[in-house]
Length: 93
Image (cartoon, rainbow, N blue to C red; front, side, top):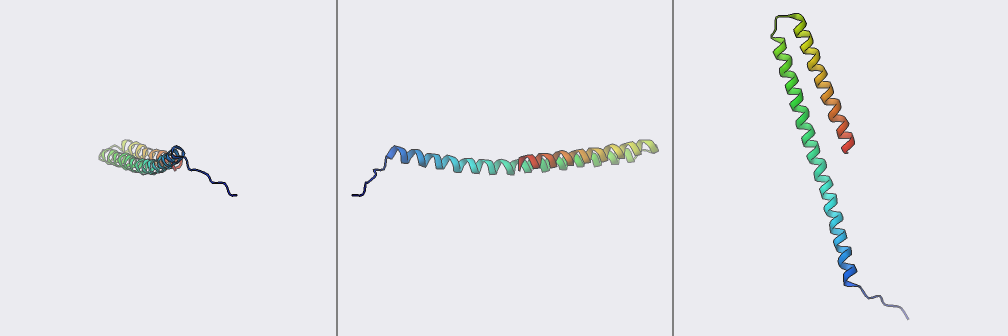
């Protein structure tokens, strides 16, 4: 004679809640990744724009070494910003 298993409403309820929590967790992680990418893109664009402005400002100088140092500093700032954001992107994904 086959045995019948009665379904326990509490167990079913807990399992359903666990599934909903797992779904919410997945959606939360996906949303967090999107928000992180948006933040990193905005940060990188802002730093690069600031470096560009700094380079233009020092480029207006008539002193050769000021122009050179300003350009070097702007390049370094852009490179650091790109390296930082790329590292964080790899860490987040």
